[in-house]
Amino acid sequence: MSMNFSEFKKLLGADPLNRDPETLRARNSAAEFEAAAAEAEAFEEKLQSALLVKPPADLLSNIKAISQQPANKRRNWLPLALAASLLISIGAVTLVWNQSRQWDNVGAYLADHYSHDGSKLVARATELVAQKDIDKIMAKLGATADEQLSDRIRLIKFCPTPEGRGAHMVVSTEQGPMTIIFMPETRVTDGEMVEFDQMHAMLVNLEHGSAAIIGEQGQAVENLQAMIRNSLKTGLVGV
Amino acid sequence: MTNDTERTARFNELAEAYSTDLYRYGMWICGNDALAKDLVQETFLRAWRALDSLKDIKAAKSWLITILRREYARTFERKVPKFTDVDKVVVAEEEELEPDAKVERDLLRNGILKLEPKYRDPLLLQVVFGHSCEEISEQLGISKSAVMTQLFRAREKVKRQMQKDGVTGNVHELF
Image 1 (cartoon, chains in turn purple, brown):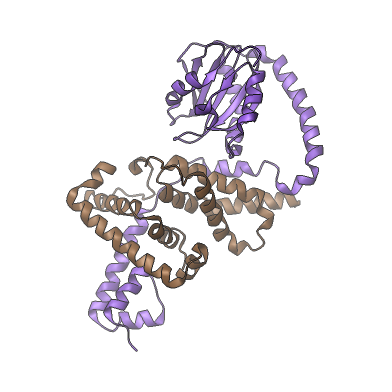
Image 2 (cartoon, rainbow over the protein chains, first blue to last red):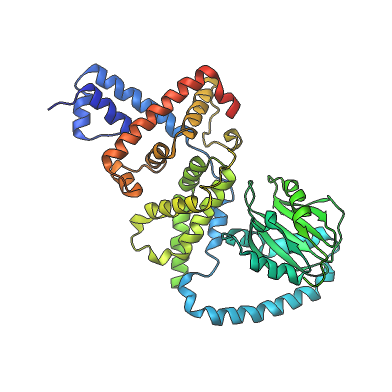
């Protein structure tokens, strides 16, 4: 039984590039069928073009960086690897802290620190961090982070700063992930912007210490300053 | 070649083959370039962790789409991200579009963004990934006839929205 025009139009609407024999036979059966098929193909071409958006230039390199981290298949080695990592980390942190005076200013520290593992940590930061884990790290630094900040934290760890230990955080924002470095003992020029390696950062003085909000050049890091000032309470004794 | 090297090479092949289409798909389902980038990176992070469970490389595309859809549902569905100005996202066409063609393209994009997910999802799977109706049926877990109906209605809705916006000029407010 041959296809009527209404059925043919529905088939075209579902799959304009359909080339099955029955559809082709119908297409060739009358001029109005042929015209409808040509119109559907032209619309499809425009639809395909409209959906072509170019991905960010660094997308592929960021994804490939993921393969530098250990996979699940090494799970059996995890305890041993953790112990080894801990020893190496202690050595590395000690070394970095001993060298901390080499930075002439906070901008040089940020460039050095972020180039070490900043982008890898952004790529790794996928899960929201539990509030208790954030509280533990913040408490050791004499600080607290309220929900406005903690609900965004996808990674947090201790890190060296120009003066002692601080916290390295990756937070989710409407503009994509950004990095916050909390420096409990370091004062900065409030509101100063520093640039390094296609990144930029805003320095913010807190009640005690300071923070750097780091993002890619296209990200408006200044949009986070009010939230950081309000949410990161510092200089707390005995928390 | 060691297992680790092979594994990394396999992962990189997947990234090269599918990251662009996954980004486009992510961009049109969440309507925000930064979120789409996060979504694709998280998809590949999960893919990397579970790579050994992918036995058939031919199934990689569907596997990655499934991961991305789950990640989107889990992370972003409850938030309604602010839509990005699509004109700020560099478009892949090399040549400059004529003004009329640009307006028509913007009307089309507006129409796609306004589609309900049940119409938008099969349309994107078909146009972005080149899925057949059978493949979309498997991906979305609905019958082939339901897929065909939704695809037909999706295109009709986009056309109607284009006509409506073309008259009211809504598209200029959005883009």
